Image (cartoon, rainbow, N blue to C red; front, top):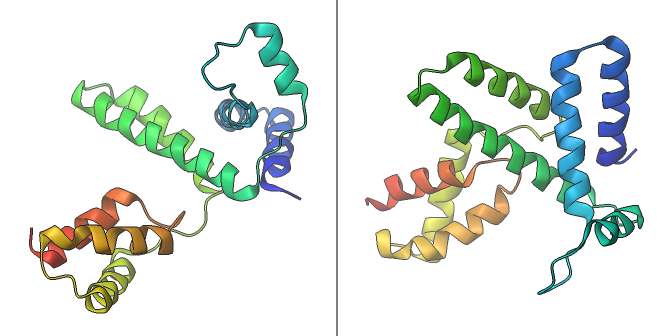
Length: 165
């Protein structure tokens, strides 16, 4: 079963279980996946009929692309949580955290900071990076290595600390 099909199945189960939090979060996630599946025409605004026609076509995303959509949704919610906390809206932050918890089920196990640090040390040694100006040598390698398993911000923090910036 593909990840997209798993999302659909879990949404149906959440509806049967009357689990409002999971149902709402999965509905938004399925909608985000469907939106990502609609190919955009370059340089042309699409009317609703054209969007509906394209949505009806069979353009299913691969599991990796669906994972990217899920990660994007998690990142958006994390950013929202930061903003809600700054505005003292803990109720809305809690709702976003609950949605992130639903999404985390579909993401691979996240890499620990010490695992990222060990890999960064190895890449720094392999590339001969010596200072902050060499981050461009290290970041692409680590980003590819930890794709889906670590946030780019975390990788960047580790690399900056190791390169002394």
